[in-house]
Image 1 (cartoon, helix red, strand yellow):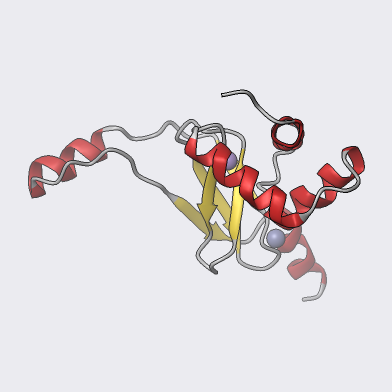
Image 2 (tube, protein in one colour):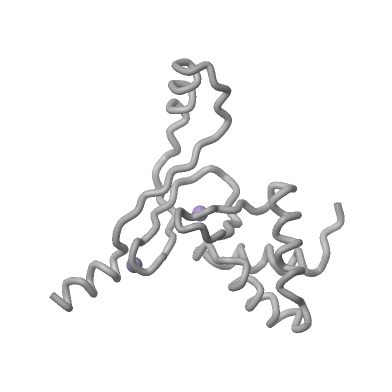
Length: 130
Ligand code: ZN
Ligand code: MN
């Protein structure tokens, strides 16, 4: 499929950030390149890119969708205080899927793991304010 100018711009935005942004944030960035692009267009293109497997959508526990240009399975950490989402450099445990499959008979094809807690900045702020 031929990619549109908008889709190229979205992929560039995602490739240049590690912040796992929302569609609204991506829209703000794409607008700097294509000023007349609408939020609905960004949503539609994100959906298409998700279908072709070029971006992955993460539904964070609070219900907000965030997008990730890294489509390989990897784990995340989310700060409960500021909402920061970080990649965790920890090998993905493939055996957990086999274990669950053999115990339950389910066909397990993927798993997601999100750690939560306080990021480094929020821990420092907590220390500073007592
Ligand atoms: Zn934080
Ligand atoms: Mn990620």
